[in-house]
Length: 147
Ligand code: HNI
Image (cartoon, rainbow, N blue to C red; front, side, top):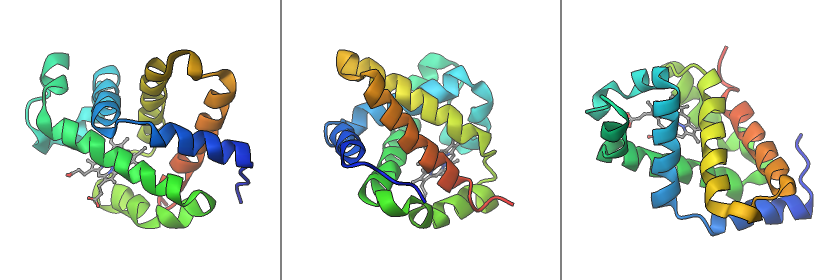
């Protein structure tokens, strides 16, 4: 069972309350698809992913980036119960989408980089430590239904 300090909860809710989902979500997903091109295989029906420019201007990818952040929002609102909150989403990624769970970490890292770039000096080591903890719990929960 994950324990959160009041300070950690404040940090996570603070980050998400100031996030522009329409900006950060697409940037994080695009970065993942460009830096780790094998992750593109799951988005075969999303249209043109031919190169970085195509990925960055693909509206289906942008929309999906926003959707992923909305998915994370559910974890923020249920920080004491992320595992249960994500049970269904984990089953979807495992049994229907067949997404290799290693990829969750890659997207999480891309999200960290995009948020760090956005927050600048405000993304202190302490903030990063809390954010990494949050993402580690999310990645773990998303991987729970794999067997
Ligand atoms: Ni993911 C669908 C959340 C990582 C590939 N994904 C979703 C949906 C949410 C979501 C929410 C929509 C579910 C629904 O329609 O009911 N995905 C998340 C979160 C993470 C994540 C919170 C990690 C932080 N997904 C990944 C990764 C990949 C991925 C790393 C592949 C590399 N996801 C998909 C695909 C779909 C998807 C593919 C279905 C897209 C579609 O619309 O066809």
